[in-house]
Structure formats: structure tokens, C-alpha cells
Image (tube, rainbow, N blue to C red; front, side):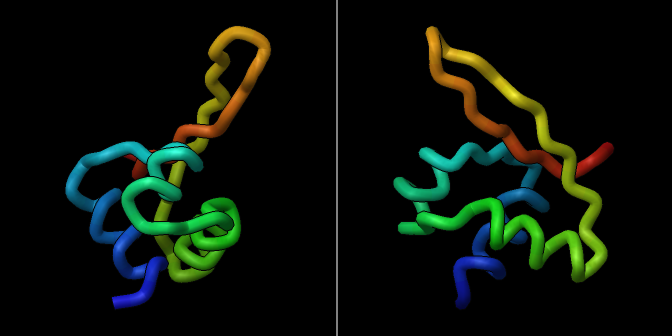
Length: 64
């Protein structure tokens, strides 16, 4: 199963995903590229920006 397929399955199970999660769970360094592929396949994925201290990062989830 490809990383994109694994990420799709993860999101469809109701989970959210950050770049750090994607690296730890799937070994994926390019989460934004995988999300873009899924969006092109018709998945409605929302992205929110979160902040922890001075760092900000994206969190992805399927739209409700």
C-alpha cells in the first residue's frame, strides 16, 4: 500500500494528521504533497494551522 493510500485510510477512519504524525506513522516527509494528491482524487480535506510556542504547523482532517 502506498503512503497516499495509507494516509487516505487514516483520514477516513476519522483521525487527524500533522506532518510529525505522518513522519512517525508512515515515514512520510512530504505530507502536503500526499494531501494534494488526495485532494486531486476528490477527497475534501480541511487544514488548520496550529501553534506550539513559536512553531506553527498544519493539521489535516476530512471535512465533515
